[in-house]
Length: 179
Length: 135
Image (cartoon, rainbow over all chains, first blue to last red; front, side):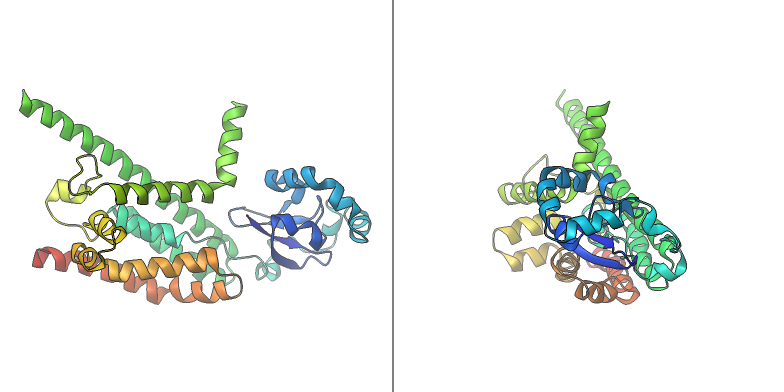
């Protein structure tokens, strides 16, 4: 199950919390949340998986003692919690953003399974994700993360295409020599 | 069109589940069929084009041997497994098993310059050495 980070009423980063326990932590449909793979913070209600969960468990959320009413008052306007607070991407807030996924597992697998130079590119990009993140360059880390994912996929797709083409050539060669 | 985007978003949300399923299927296939006997097994592109062994050559045969409980034979097919598999296991543990803040600590080491560049250098060095020695 996906785990989410959320911003509490003081705009502090909290979590990670698994999807089915978000409500226990006072997360409502209007709370800003984030998980691995998301480009930016989003309102919980705009994330399909979370919205579905809230749709299915709304009764629980609203009957939760104490928490539901207070929270819904605070967050009745989705952007109210933003007023006066720095934007989520300003430098002083970057330290709270969780590190983007670096796809290092897949990059290493790509080098060993696909035997293509693209896996190497993916590994280097993966390595950059953590490096940029620790230097507080969150946008660069996010970009490196997307690049790492992209090169893993390129490696996989090109590898598969070459396999199929190679297989066809071999088959045709076999046919020709049989004739 | 809507159903297509629906399927895409479904796959995207449960991507780990689908990837896991594919990995399991691949492992079952590698267990059931011996890649060196099976015509349909994927062939190394580098080897078919240049005749040289790439650093990953022998990986399928090694996995087949490993899944059948022959670790020594597996290492003989591709000794690079000794470096690659523990590293992959460590990365996978950090990625999917550990929780913060331990996860960050592991990733800082395993995903840091030292480990990653060591892996890359070893990868290329092994590729050169195996072709010189004919392993």
